[in-house]
Amino acid sequence: MIKKITKQLIAIAPLVIAVNAWALEDLDNENLSEVYGQASLFTTDYIAPGGSNPNTNIGFYRLGLDVEIAMNANIKKFQVGCGGVNGAGVCDIDIDNVRLTGVAASSASDSGPATDFILTRPFFDFAIRNPDIASQREVVGIRFGAAQALGRMSLGENPDPANSADDTGINSISADMNAVITDGTINNVTACVFGTTGTPPSGCVLGFGLDTNATLSYYDYAAEHGGNSIILQRSAVNGCGSTDHPTATNCIFFDGIQAQAALFGLQLTSNLTENLKYIHDLSIDDGSGNPVNDLSMSVQKEAIRWQKVSTGNFTGVVPAQRGWWLSIPQVTVRGLSIDDPVYANALDALAGATVVLRDLDLGQLPADNCYGSLSFC
Image (cartoon, rainbow, N blue to C red):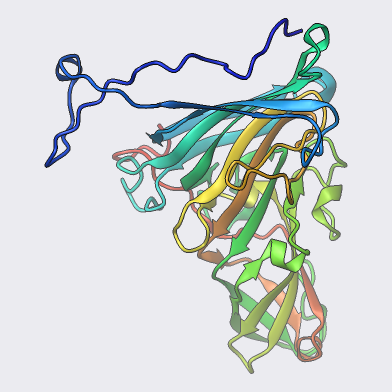
């Protein structure tokens, strides 16, 4: 229980800054101690209950930093929200081998360590129930994030892009995000003159197949779903099905992906259901290399709608569910290269039939964020 909370969370202290009138240069600690100045480093905000705030009797206190944070990090095991109401060994978020790098990083040797994941104007939010009643104030949620973020988040390992059995990465996640696929190819499409469609064990059961490849069209999940983000909730039902993603724990579902086959110009419409362990490379940018707004991670005792820092409103906000929650307004997926066999009935493709694809190795490789021969450090 919070005994007293005021809108002035902190006293703003002088910030020591050195500015050269004609140039900027790095200063070590000794040089910094010899200069003086004053600026506002911290910002504070309060969002009262009511009005446009859709949460019932919850106010928000925010402490922000008017700075830019550049980081490069490797996290061997990222686990939060484990046990408790989830049960033994089950986590809200559980990811192996997380790498945070700059957008320029790739799977090329030594490309990651010299790049940085950038957070601009980081902040902390505190969600307080009954903020105006001193005897009943209660912290119901804490969030930390940034007004803008730009970088790359690589996940797990994919030793052999042609083998979907060796992929590791996301074991569980509770999150909302919008995903944009900008390009990719399906390299092993068999257009069956007679036969079934999909992934093995389907195949050309009668007649013969014509091998080709297909180029994926630009795909924006939110644009296909009325502006709604992908919601991944660990506490939902287990298993990967052919229906939409909210019914699955560790699956992501992209419906209506278009692919143009090279042979005869066949237009394939695919529903792709992927276990999240096949996702290895997420670029945190708007698709054009610019930062995204309102990246955050929160923990709450109940579903809470957190305000968008970039706009100052709650419009279109996805409720963060109980426990730990990651909110990524947009991830961009580039350069998918699918080598797993895919079967498409040529007559069905001409008629616009949908090919259901499941658990393909997407050919993604995590960024190399170590110098030398180390795969993870």
